[in-house]
Image (cartoon, rainbow, N blue to C red; front, side, top):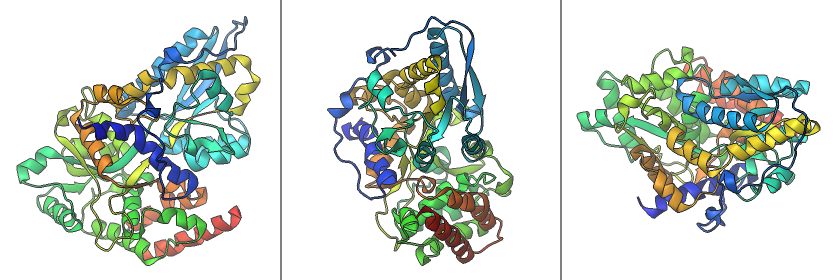
Amino acid sequence: MKKSMVMLLTLFIAATTLLSACGSGNGNGNNNSAASNASNDSASTTQPSESTTDTSPFELTLRHTQVGADKQKRLAILNDVVKKVEADVPGLTIKLDGVESDVNRKEKLRGEMAAGNPPDIFDLFGSPDSQVYAKEGMLLNLSPILDELGLSDSFSSLEPFTYEGNVYGLPIGGSGEGFFYNKAYFEEKGLKVPTTWAELEDLLAKIKADGKVPMAAASKAGWVPLMLANHLWARYAGPDVTQKFVSGEAKWSDPNVVKAFAKYQEWEDKGYFKKGELGFEYAEYTTQFTSGEAILMYDGTWKSSVFKEGQSGEGLIGKVGFFNLPPVDGGVGDQTALMRDVNNGYGFSAAVEKDPRKLQAVKLFIKYMYNEEMQIRGLVEDGVLPSMKLSEDVLSANITDDLMKEIVNVLNNSKSSFPAFDSLVQGDVTTEISNIQIQKLIGKQTTPEQMGKELQAVQEEANADSE
């Protein structure tokens, strides 16, 4: 494996996450291989200082989003951590509460935060959620805990979870987004990975003419189609356009943004997506691809875990590739940019600090979850890119999967990146596009121009409220 490929896993997250935190197009170039040699082994971290003679039974609640067949590897990692913590804290039982990711973020957690009763440990989205909750005093300040455990300098970036200089959440891993494709079908039909926009359009037309579904689709939850839509407007209007919506430097109704909406609608009209998508859940998205019905699937790099032994896509092991969205003719800015972030992780209720035994359990959870062993397990077993600094030797020794090598190559060949739209715009804007506008566009209940106009109205109201 090329040295640059493994270096990227250490460097790319820090270089791109700063975008979402600082709203600039510049990465953090200060990381290097020497910095990434910091040891994250659980044996090297400091044992939490709290101890108690109280052994009476008590319970700690843990909200996770590792639900569904394709997240079983991730759930297994979590369960192993839970068992270690319970074994080290007398009387402790950790109650697991599994909730679908979108429901947790947009419904349950928001309601619990408003009521002042979030779970003790919970799946937390970084920017902007963690800053909002931290500002309201609902999150446990982790900075002193990281110091105590010797983990303060162990992460590639903590910016999405940082508020006023303190850390309020920890990213579990990194991700990028692009097209997974069926290599076996490509070889059978003599197709090649598109490197230009014209080649992509030609590819979609050929797949459709062959009686296959060009692109998997499952749009019951708006975030799924918005992965690709986000990449389209980043191509047409520039990788930094979304943060400009918040600053007022750009509008959702700008011509180049509307062009992206129009392209998405054009692909809908041409039948390039699976019919009936508005009724399909995310799990069905994967099935369309693994069954061979759909030839392309735009998704996050985490999806690589499906194509492993014992998983739903094991029949496609060695038969799946990954490519970036090609450059748009006349597009704005870097046309190699793709979405990357470290926005998914865990947060902890501020109320935990009032209970010494719960605080001890939280510290042990952090110790056992955030170390080299678990980062490597996440990478190898689940396809989750590391959020912690790992040495090149460790990465080289563990990246043996051909698909992951191909993913890293794609990441390596992109000159810049952009964070997901929902880490930049306000919650009301995310709700408008995720729960209303994208479904209306797919269902032909709006036009690209009207979609841009209505989104901009919500954006301007959100911007005014933020002043």
